[in-house]
Length: 447
Length: 179
Ligand SMILES: Cc1cc2nc3c(=O)[nH]c(=O)nc-3n(C[C@H](O)[C@H](O)[C@H](O)COP(=O)(O)O)c2cc1C
Ligand code: SF4
Ligand code: FES
Image (tube, rainbow over all chains, first blue to last red; front, side, top):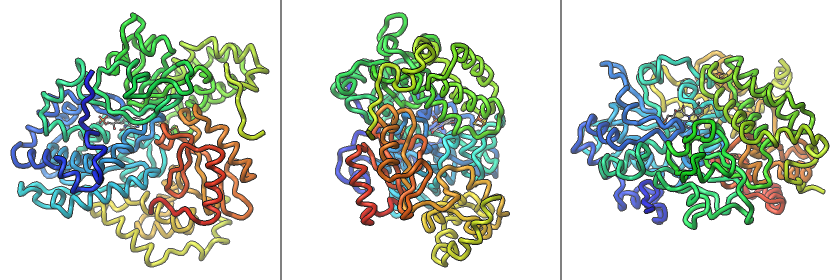
């Protein structure tokens, strides 16, 4: 497989954070091309042709989403960039923004032109304050060059770009919670419909897109949608940033062509170089903490014995029985010494902590699951707790305002599905469970 | 509310300077007329960077600057985990405890820091220098275990690195990462 890079192509160019080096390597050429030679609808058309799918997690086709944007006369429209990046395992947007900030800035202006938005916002998680400064510098540079502000490239298109921080709340990555937060409120998700495309920021039509989706518009306009779609397999087109973490020899952010085999990604020299310390692979959560965990035998192969590929379809092959999801590209790898019960408890604690508290199935359910999982993890559980978890799960799933409830429920169901023996071991070996993980004797750093 | 007692003791110490107010007004200008409330998170961060935490007095001044009711500031400040609503140490170590960091040893690291500083999670050292907190995923999962302190990330941590980090902070050598 070739290893084309569309986003991180110029990563190693010295000074690429600054506008001069960025322009020297083809930066803002897509913007100029669009503003001088293309109509907004033609830009939307190229994005549709590219097959680009939202990189924030759900994988919804970006061009299609854009075409849903309501365009009533006399009401402003907005583009909002979701830079909240808080799905455990995901750290790719931070990398992109930190290393090549102008790619996002150019993508924002370009996408805003396509959507007819005169103002756009980047909502970035508060923990990334230093990245906000990097982006603010890039925005200032773009204003100084006339790429932002009035009459950009003499096209008559005006645009202002504003960046603003969050305050530390995972839920603000959910698009309607993000909009609430951007309006200066608590991050409580809204009931849909109406969808943001009709009533979004300040009740105006709004498109919310992930950082990587917006950045990808730059190469799409440069090369054309067809060229972009020629990379990848089937409905998984183009390249994807994958952030790999956990027990890997070389964790980090990689730009891959969709269609790369999972095996190559985990073990290949150009990628993660295998499991850290020469240990064995136990399990993998391929798309951020919300997606189902895969046991080792289903990571590189599907249940049907085919090569598992890094595509939306292949990772989901087998449904929730034996598959998972590409999600946000937060690729978490577990070595043979890791305890699945402990990790499931940890993730559930995360969701319980981050639930906004609006709907009782999510607020109460996540807290309850956390308690039961903690009981199991510390050797104080009962066998019936395992079924209790499955039961709580069903009561949360599908019964909440936003998908955080599902995101909390799925990983628990998947962990029990594939690692039931490990849950049972915690019940049948209560004393051992208190002093060690399943398979791992905890090495305290403090004697 | 138990907070109210503290306001009395901190009154005066969280009075906004003209310079700070100017920065806050500037943040408001980023948003269209009538939508200035959108600047609230930026403004809360500014106040916290100045005083280390958010007193009710700070939040009341922010309400005035934004021309909203105080409750509108309280309800926002209490929702977001980055805001400290009680006095904290000069340096707050927020250590990520979520899955991917746990896989590479964050549990043990948190224990180590607590032992080293002789404090529990949520506590502050007697000299008022350090507070230990845990945080959920900080968006640096491939570089863990890690912690954040005053908008700066410290990654790939080990006990040795913690030792030297604490010394550097004690000597005042590490400046805030932003704001
Ligand atoms: C609980 C929750 C958290 C989310 N967090 C993020 C996030 O941190 N970043 C992101 O881009 N999308 C996140 N999403 C998805 C967004 O709601 C939205 O679908 C996405 O920003 C759309 O952009 P895209 O179409 O370009 O992917 C989250 C969704 C949910 C339900
Ligand atoms: S599902 Fe959970 S996070 Fe989402 S709105 Fe309901 S309570 Fe809030
Ligand atoms: S899990 Fe620690 S930074 Fe993501």
